[in-house]
Structures are given as C-alpha cells and as structure tokens.
Image (cartoon, rainbow, N blue to C red; front, side, top):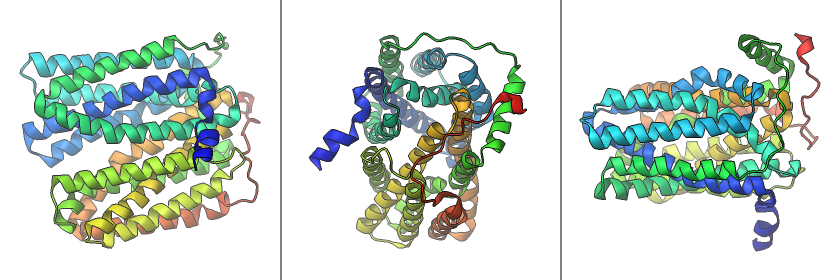
Amino acid sequence: MNKLLSINTFKAFRSRNYRLFFSGQSFSLMGTWMQRTAVYWVIYVQTHSAFILGLSVFAIQFPTFLFSLLGGTVADRYSRYKVLLITQIASMIQAILLTVIIVFTKYSVPEILFLSVLLGIINAFDVPARQSLVQDLVENKEDLGNAIALNSSMVQVAKLIGPAIAGIVLELFGAGICFLINSLSFVAVIISLMMMHLPKYIPQEQKQKVIEGLKEGVTYLKSAPSIGSIVLLLALSSFLVIPYVTLLPVVAKISLHGNASTYGYLFSASGIGGIIGAIFLASLKPDANLRKVLISAILIFGVGLMLFSQTENIFFALIFATVSGFGMMSLGTITNTILQTSSSKEMRGRIMSYYAMAFFGMQPVGALMIGSVSHYVGTSETIFVQGIAALLIAAFFFRTLWKPNSKIQREDDYSSSSL
C-alpha cells in the first residue's frame, strides 16, 4: 500500500506548476468551506427558515448554471491563467465585502444573498478556467487523471476540515472572522499563481463573436456523442441522485433519532468515502478504462443509497454513507477526467462549462424537487428511489460506456469550419 501511494498516487506533484496550484488551492478551499458554513449559519440564525436556507444554496449555485456557457467561452478565447487570476481576486473582494458587512454594519439577509449571487456569477467564469487549466499545469499529460483525482481529494479534505474549523470560530469569534479568514486565504492562491512558470500565451485571432463561440460549443457537443453522453449522464445524476445530501439532516433526526451531531457524522462519513474514492482514482494506472470505472462507481453509488435509506442503525448508516460518498465523488471526478482528456484544447473551456452546468447547476434544481417529493412520500422512500435512479442511469449508458478499449479517444477532429 505504501509503495502504491508513493509511486502512483502523487504522480502529478512531479510538475512544479501543479504543486503550486495544489498548495494554493488547498488553503483557499479551507476558507471557502469556512465561509459557506458561516453563511448558512448566519442566515439560519437570522431567519430560522429552512426555505431561506435552501434559497441561499440556490443563490450561490444557480447563477453558475446560468453563466457557465459564457464562462467557458471566455476560458477558450482568452488566457485561462489570467481569467483564473481575475476570478480569484474577485472572489477575495467578495469575501472582504462579506466581512465588512457582517462586522461593521447592521446587515440583513438580502445583502448576504446578493453577495452569494455575485459569488455564483464569479464561479461561472472561475470553474471552466480552473478546471481546463489543470491540463496545462502537468508536464506529463498521462498525469492529468491523477491531478484531477488529487484535486478531488483536496476538495473532500477541505469539506471535512473547513466546516469543523468554522464551527469553532463561529462559537468563539463570530461569522465575521470566518469571512476574514476566507478573504486572506485567497492570498495563497494569488501568490501561487504568480509563482508559476507557464509558456507565453499567444492569443488566437478571434474571427467569431462571443455568441458564435457559444453556438460553436453546442455544435461541438453534438458532433462528439461520446462527450455528450458523459455530460448527459452527469446532468441526470446531479438532478436525480446527488441531491440526496439535502435530506441528510432529516435522516439524522427522523430515521436515526439523532441530533445535529448525528448529521455531522453522516456528512463526515460521506466526506471520508469521497477521500477514499479520490485516493483510489489517483492510484489508477494511466491506461485504466475510466468509462468502465464510471459505470462501476454509479452502481456502487446506487446500491449504497438503497442500503443507506433502509437502515435505522447509526453504525450501518455511517458505513453506507461512506459507500455512497465513494460513489458520488468518483462519479464527479471520472466525468471531469474523461471530458478533459476527450475534448480538444480549443474547446476545453466550453466543455468544462458544460461540466459545471451539469454538475453544479442541476443540483440546486434537483434539491428543490427531491425536497418536495420527500415531503409527500417520505425521506427513506425518496432516497431509495434515488438509488434505483442511479442503477437505471448506469443501465441506460452501459452500452455506450462499457467498451473493451481502455484508451480514451480524443475528439480532435472537429474544426470550426464544419459550422
């Protein structure tokens, strides 16, 4: 196991630029999850409304869905490095504004929601640029899958540690300090970006208008069915299956007869499963058939949810939550890897904007639907059906993905002249 971890798991760290990216993002993500936790806490304390709490989640994620295609077009038309640098500075300004409002004014919930919407718009440009830039940061392109898996492990660790630190800071110092820490965390990202040694960006002559670039992205997606099927699979999963996490507080209180600590345990168990999944994916060989692994991950996800929905024992609930977290994280990471390695360089930003729309944009919409359904049919029954939905998605895409060839074919035969 130690040999596996030392040789395969951290291959992407051989690239200096990726090491800088990973270290800077690690600090920033801790701050991001501290801020997110504090925002939800402040809103709930102010309103005591689960609906307003859900609205705050929607305010952050839905603008990302609306503007992601534009963000992907910008990432393909301009230097992704500069776009990322700008979005990180903009995110830092947003965190500073939150800090000032909370600490120095008699703030209200609409002000916080407005800044949440602003952050969602920033993320619409940040995600495509950040995701598509990773391929330029690894010197050996065979390390790309490893780099993406390490990114996922970084996110999962931040989701475990950030909220825990936020809870302590909220109790001792208040929400303003959480926002201040997040704003300071962006300094690490900005410094790491400025320390990178990247090839000089050569701007391409832009004969198209932005709207034409958007249309080209849609045409490319239609011309590459293997990529389109992955985006569709991710969108369906994000809409029907992944929003089960919004029901975890209800499971903790009703099914397991627990309290807030029980909810925290379930959330942590899901995160631990995600970390295990990230380490597993980071350790895969470069010639691994990711499409088969993807189908297996969805099956594991679905079975884990079905078992999780039927238990009233906290011990087994934690085990099945870990299994579900493994499947959910693997689903997001593998689709990310396939999309990046299958798409052409010229279209990568727009393809990653589709990834952002499918993964981040469909979840808040799905959460609203899942919450409504569970109100009428019950939480356990809803999660069980979500598990079945995962199995049906795996069955529907089985013939498309379960192919004998282990190599991912890149869709490089597209040119704008085909428009």
